[in-house]
Length: 260
Image 1 (tube, rainbow, N blue to C red):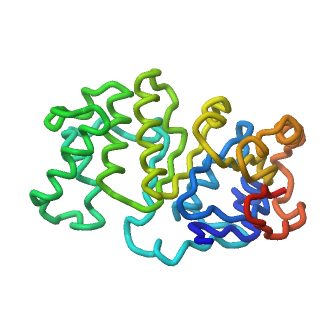
Image 2 (cartoon, rainbow, N blue to C red):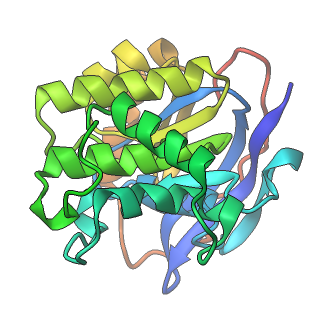
């Protein structure tokens, strides 16, 4: 079994307080996984650690052997954290996806331009190359950012709440892009809050409430029992508690089964 990420007793703390607490398990290469949980459960924190933007306070995250090259892991933050006020054209933003191959000062050649045009067509923005991003709607901007990910062509794609505040048509279209990535064998990990969407589109789910609640096939991970456990744990959170109070969780990953 090929592994994209191996988490071993991962704890991530802010000023000594837990955001993610003793999580262990594996993301299989080529899997499509949703990360869900109550507000404040540590979902975005865990995703940023997978992206390499945050280091665990305790434990470690190991990447698969083919993920050491620059640009091998693509990360899209929440729209609320993206500044679209710069006077950039759509073409320039999408071309940023090619940076791992050509460098920040590299020339975008004809092959890259064709890749950019194809990516814009795939997200429904053909002909938008010269539009300024600060003139775009929220949905159009997210389509542009998805096009950038397509151009990056990374084997692993991490998305943080990518469908928040989007209209139904844009959400449907971008879910289609996510499905194509999965069909192409890429590893896709998405933080979400819409459980109906997760059940419909995502084969695997990691349910977290700072600590791991369940991790496996979506129907099992989102059982009523596990959802009740997650909600119950969230009610007991104390932000003044030490992050090392909970015992470490043994790393287990039986094929086809969930983690507890």
